[in-house]
Length: 490
Image (cartoon, rainbow, N blue to C red; front, side, top):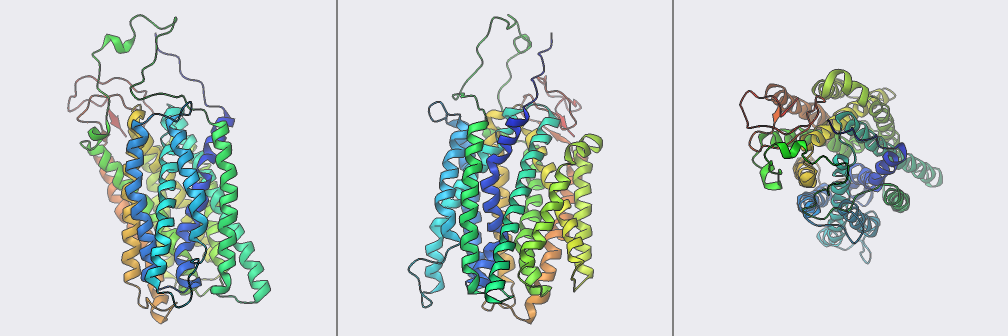
């Protein structure tokens, strides 16, 4: 007799889970969109030092993420608290204590303080913030395969999660627009400068306050079973004396070091890295493109990202239906087509005014599509191997964090006027940066997607149970045969 299917996750639990990453999303929105703008255009530091600070944060995040993922898989929870929620709590506290200092001027510094000294002042806060961000992200993502088991429920839960990511970005950009609007009304300065320091300081404090409330709701409303390392379920009165698993030879678990031998692990990692490069780099440089290339007033650094994420939110609501009808690969390809349409529009148009909102709609929809789909692919790669799920998410995140940091540092070093706020050369520079970080990387991502379509994801070297991306139910695999499709993830 087949085991009864688990009951669907209640809506209340799905919503409480989705808000568990809200603090991270609020902080990430400010980090990627406004860090370079704040340090270069507001505080007046060189583009190289601003890029170095972002690189330090990305490297710290990249190092912390797999380490946290490994420890989250190995360690038990704190007392009666589950291991995932324990790490989530540690990360939340770290973020709350460190993030406000990043968007505040250096305490005790003056205009004569050298930039390298200011950089050293900010780095400890950045490292603590990135550790907390990584702990929160990995623990939150690794809860998905533990809360739900079916493919479509994973997509739905990921879509809920991303929907609140979009809400977080809308919140940040909406607040930024209000604060910038009040600043312009009070001082009459349409361009960014040191007069906007209070705007970013107040924005960071509001972000921390709202994020703390959402994290509290997550911890109160999301259940997690406390399972110590090596846990196995105890038989109950209704448990069959000879279960299906006992009728077959015992199969080994897929441990963290086993993943390193699986080609499918690297296939998904490269696609996820390309996805994050498109999403994060476009978010990082959209403000520079608007103010330096298009010469738009500073209010546009809030309104254009706001339009992007409203578009992304609406797209995320369709992800479950689209994935069910055309599958993961075609859904991801559809997102790439939209990204390429945006890149072509930017490349062929040097000056935009109102039409920039239309381009923002394309970028938002495309980014949402590829991000939700890539996260679903990662969750389905893990399948039933939730005991090592945090390591997989940590390793995926490691590739994207380091790649993002190196890409930003490379772009900042290519800046034609690194010591000035802007020069004639930076007008075309940010124009082609936006084309490269969207269209250029989308072409690379399409090659990775082609590899997935030609060589479907397969657990080749370890005989374990996986859940197929096409919706097949997980089952124990027999001895590996080259043409056996039982472990294929389409």
